[in-house]
Length: 584
Image (cartoon, rainbow, N blue to C red; front, side, top):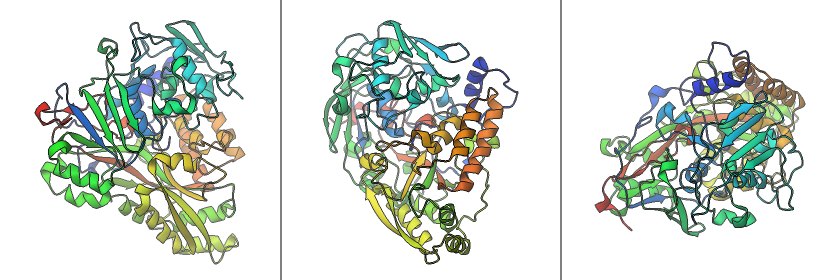
């Protein structure tokens, strides 16, 4: 999604494909460096664990400048929120291994006994739940509860969540959830421990989809519609003790979580406290100092670019900095359904006017970012590197942009508005200045991060330009291009992914053709080719592929950036070194 989960281990995916499809060739699927770029430029700890093995107990504090977008598993599709939700509050049928580097892309069973059994040419998938699974009140977790959450993910009043179910389940067209007693016949639960999914077309990658929160259990008796966002009922190692929006969330142990059923979550702390509403530079300064209660704290958001000079030159502080690649492509997305961006020459003018070097600098510089030259990250391309199909100089080509505007009937330029999360204001100013060189006058609107995706997902009222990114849910072009550029899944509210509102019939037809290919290597090459074709039609302009710089306190152990959760700290394994330094 917009900065959601990303590339898992490519070889594991290819193996999964070969189990259920014919014609797998000897060439690998998506592969290469996790960041799709120059891994030798990393300046901090990626692929390693900071602080050794944690002790059990104490309070882990998470310092944040924002609230969560959503914690309801039917709506949770922002990468950091997903990491927090599926590692601490609820479990899914399958999950990712808790390990740094490429090993973190390995699928392992979670609620299910295994990774699922395909039949009917990968159009049917069966999962058996483990025995002894319980909610926070001690009641058993059932297959019917997983089915119920899948169904409620279709509800119009619960927008914004993963839509794999809508795209793949048979008979899902027009379905709007279980509120009126209607259920999906394509999700069967023959008993309390068995769930069967009937798909409309073969989907060998389906186990990767069941990592997503859509496939977490929700008991019908606890469902409160949109209000469930405030108090998800726990099937994981922690439960919510209190939640004051925009202020504080406190998690305590779920006494009915059984570690014997869970090979992933270690649940080291007794309590987790998320302190919200802090200023980003305030968080950085507190963690750089790393004293008192902040010794047992971690940062929710990225280290600010202006804070890097306080970190990188100091070995003791730099040793506490994680910088795993997000594997997400950041983009300036243009409203292709509204003038003047319904004109391809206007959109191309933006591509040529944009100074990606300036955006790179505003995002923290080359130590923490790479300039993007394609839509999909490098891990989805041959050799692990993005191609450069447009061949636009990194600083742009202003004269070419002005010529395109003239051809579009806009010789004097025009005015427009760009919406960004308030943490990206510096990036927005770089965009504003670079487009201004060609006569495109940009007004900046900033939005609180917790409301950002709901704001830009309101397609009727949103601005012409937005700045956001996309991360593949697993290493396949099928989890990137269709979600960002298939116009058939645009929603008026809660729109996710296709923030350029791009509706292009040849593109959608080609997506269907690629999805029907039985040879994984052939499909991979086709996605790569389609990437360049879409970029030439200019619905968006990629800017950078970021890393996720996260600073942790001096008393933190077991911390690493998980590649499959956007480089965010894996909350399954993080904890404290010394309980005597724990506060609260």
